[in-house]
Length: 180
Image 1 (cartoon, rainbow, N blue to C red):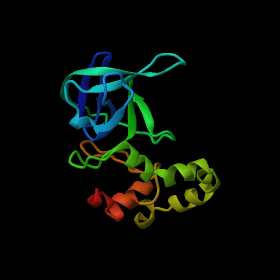
Image 2 (cartoon, rainbow, N blue to C red):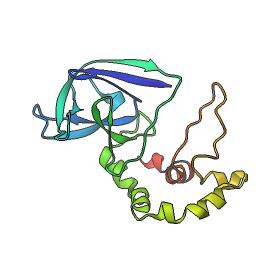
Image 3 (cartoon, rainbow, N blue to C red):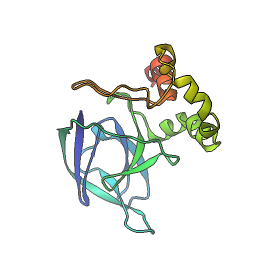
């Protein structure tokens, strides 16, 4: 799996080219925008996460950009805030479906509001017995809606990419990425 290695003043981080990160639009870091990692340029400023409880973010100048590959894959958890720290850099936990589709963090975060609400209201816990029963079936017509344990172990050279069921319906079923 290809990824980008971004060296900046405070360290180095790795992410897919379609992952979204935050970039300072002014020198002191008061204003920001989101950008795909693949669109970053030397001279852009990403936000390095601060240390300790006081936290904070510090703009960090990008020094070099190079490509790499991994056999182990990558992981992008869905968080309530929509943000995550990757190798010390504050990033969005969202990614675009393609490098040619410039998805913003704010649009992705709004789009996934129903998923965050579902979990915030506790519906995942309440409906767990229903999902367990529904997803334990070996019928391929049902498992497309299920997430997790139904996946077969990966075979060498095969991708075990997994999308959240909501994204699977929106992207692969309704083809919403065509509209972006």
